[in-house]
Amino acid sequence: MKSPPLDRKTRRLSDTVQKLEARVAQLQKALLVAGRTTTLQVGSSSISLTPTTIEIKSNEITLSGSGRITVKAAGRLVLKGSTIVQN
Image (tube, rainbow, N blue to C red; front, side):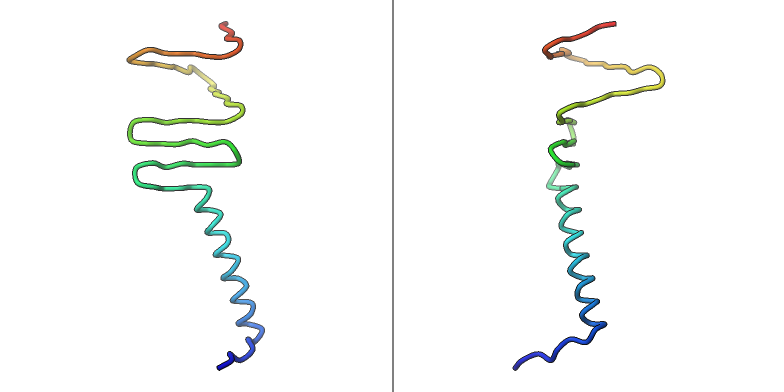
């Protein structure tokens, strides 16, 4: 049996639901929670968190602080780059 045509309000509601579903899909891509890992991704940049690690990936990463920035490592601290400048 063929469904009757939708009235204007029902059509508008259906369009809104479809837009909301599309937005939810976008948000699910932006913040993925899978098991014990959470990843925030924007374009090709991402921050991944697990119970034991934090990984930041991007073309360029900037750390800024109006005061002191401290880096501590209980183990080895490795800095790699084409040029490392120390002030």
